[in-house]
Image (tube, rainbow, N blue to C red; front, side, top):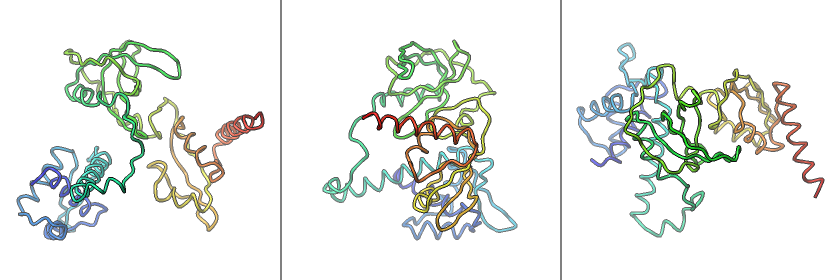
Length: 302
């Protein structure tokens, strides 16, 4: 069985055992069979074990309900693994389509044909994270207009809007920082191994934020109002995992978010223009008003 086939089986098993449906073993087997996988009981059991051992996703058996379920509380990588499976399945679907006919490329358009600068650094950075090795590089800060040398302890790679970022601890500043890999050059993975700090939980840095900017600020409850059209998009693709519907009518959707507001959040709000209105907190209402007022001045000058 190909690796792609294995990944597809993993995806189907998670799909069937998710959402607390508690399917029996036979129902899982039938579900796989309906999707083209005629496999033994032992293979399914091995898949469940591999999903747990390799990816940290716990699929448990509930004796009272006589079925299996995903223990999301103990599966710390659950959301990331689902995203990984989504990418793998999409890649396999495209590969199958192209194998059938290269002409299919005429009907597929990707977001950009430009190669992301620094993408070649992904593999060595990932290896450095896994091996807990220090890395050295030169980084250009667009906002500060500086170019500096860094030696860091790498902790996490994060993708946002087709760009990749490195979360790392910087000993010289005794602080965690974000580095865009498109601004990293002269990368060197050093032989020196660093000791991970038990106080650093890389994923928690982005739990309450949108995007890659993070601040040591308190979580805010934000209320947003959307018109009926934009509401459909916000409901189908939530802005953040904390999103909850507060009120919904034919003309308006009001949601609440519990986040640490950052640059990427403000960018999303401004991108939606007149379709969204910030209701709370009051200081954020003023911030968006001032930003829009400044943008209007640019047009009044022209």
